[in-house]
Length: 608
Image (cartoon, rainbow, N blue to C red; front, side, top):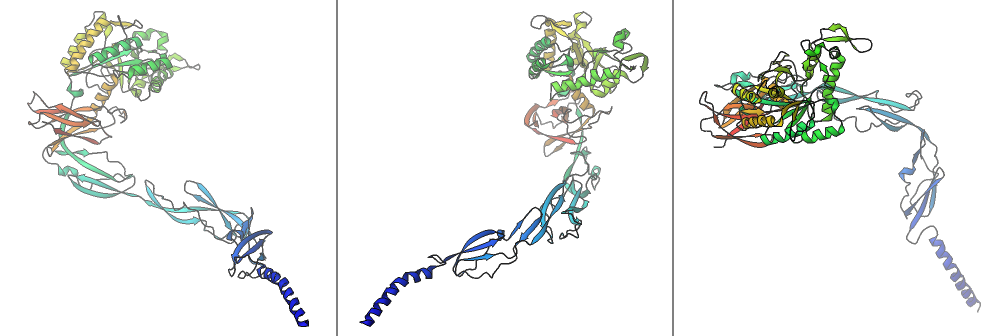
């Protein structure tokens, strides 16, 4: 009985202890064997979960941190980190291990400064960008070293400063370009230092054959700034027609003072008869509303703006009747010249962007050749004459063509001077002389076509039905219509080119500085055009302005009847013609000039 009681008591104890043992066996772990390990660093606790048997690892980013001036990192723990068998806590033993932070400033190309944080005793790492492409037009650069040499910062070698400045040092060598000279299909390559003018290693003149001799390169040989290819051009001389498309003469009609109602009437007649003209505008008479009107009118394409001074002030020459007027004579001073001739051009180009003003007509068709000094009040002192060339010299320097008041039909080849008939003293015919019975405008046209000249007509108001009545009256609409009709018939027969003042100036100026060539290769005619972009009187012929096509007369085989070529991206088909002077066949080809001294080539093929 006694033993039975002992066994019952033992069973009861086991029943009570088993749950406790179960709780003890699970203490410090989860059911799936995962432990929580805590890393205490400088008061901050970071917890990670680790499987039984794995070594816990503190996250890397928790092992170091920075303040504005120092860097800290963990260097040890309060006990050895062992494989996880239970939850555990590890405390960093060193949390205030201070390292000074320095600012390494790298001055990169382009004066770009990049700052890099570097810890005391550690070598700074340069940022990207210091080994960038340092190739320039004239030289090639390569990274050499840092100045000063990179060092690990310490209090001693930084002299107490918290920053260092490093500048890259580069070494440069001359850049060379590959330049090829193509001479009759043989390519001669040379290596040329940047900015040096390349030279062909062979004499291209020795490769001429028959009538085709060396006449130049396909583009201007310039100092080397890139790889380039130059092709030798061989050919014989060709003629540039004196007038566009081989016409016999030029008609330019200029309408003075900006009389809008006359311009509207003229525009309609121009479209009816295939004519063109130029409106000589007085800049200060324009305003925003009138400029909009003129722009709309010019958009029709038969009229263009050119300059007729700022206020229409008279700048009288000594021989002019206006010189006797003291007030007008007082206009002859450099301040007035600049305002009337130079500032007016700038103002018109501002009003009409994209239109280059190249021609001028002075008020009352006269320009002084001497001036007067200015007094202390900025007024002309008529007792102090100056032999400075006067308004004429200013006009010569500012414009490419100046129309004045001497009567006559102008030559197709004006001299680069201010003599009568020169570029700066072009002759005119005035419609009013016809109206007054002193001349016949129709005869002017006949003489221009018959003798080969440049008829520059001056007109103010055309008055009568449909033309308004403002301005100085020069011609009736009836007589003007007769003139336009006669001019239109000459234009239709290609005996007359009716050009604006600007068009005629560009064509003739270019022609005076151009040379044309022709050659045949594989049954294709090649027409070459070379332009010297500096006139004989020293004016630059800017490529953006002086790009008017010149008409070249080139000989073709007798079997040709029709030919074609490309101009401005369009195919032009033209008939071959026979010159009665020699009985040979020719073709007229319009070619746009290229860069200074370069030979622009146009290929012409037979159609039938």
